[in-house]
Length: 352
Image (tube, rainbow, N blue to C red):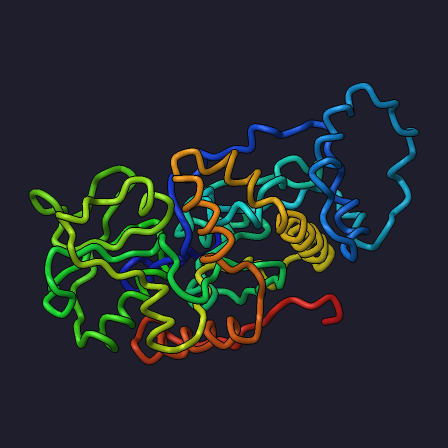
């Protein structure tokens, strides 16, 4: 067994969202294109929805010649076993992952963000959409794939502090255990903007159980994911609320990166290249598919809010500003004792 990541107190989160494993693509078609297509077609734009719908005719199509896939189309096409992906089921991740489960050479495992780093380190998955803080807390070196991320240039809607009293007066905050990055971000913002350093208490929101849950409702709690919109506490009970994405942007003028595709640095380079090709193509494919994604996966959201959330609040591409925001977050995490050391951020490159 590989070493597991640290607990939720010294570090805590990846932003993104609710009930792990509850969302499974209902439209999984058995005959969908193999991942080898993704590897050899990375220079083109995503398949259209019409193309995707066409796979439903696969049962009646003539079978390919027996040796149709025996000739390697690229060096990575020889990888024999499905690439194992660890993903979150939050709505904000759908533009990165929607359709992956239909690919023949990919297996997808759903979990909450805080559990994905351990699954990666224990070799249960090859690549995982992990909390950004876990890149620094991992006991072994990792690489980030430049195939997409979960970030935001301002308000995120789904990373929120709910409080019954002014923020500067808080003595404790009950923090959603689904998240690592969000808890670290909360600590930085409370210390630097509000001169406040409350105790952090693990709060198992999904099971409605907390490790030290007080009678009644917590005086303050940090929630992440879809539940912030679909099952939020009543504003009359929590009149003070902070969107952590908006707070970070106001404090630093930079975007924030909540989650990254991470891979162990020791993984077979061919496997890394295949994962990069598949994930990059799927992200590009889904850019123009926000409406169908909302229709299928945001059933508990107001449709207009869900579309605005994915199109306007969540960012998926690596830019210089987002990279700078990530580096600043790591710098502040080190200064506040939230990580033991700071590694340089290493993005995988096919030329490396």
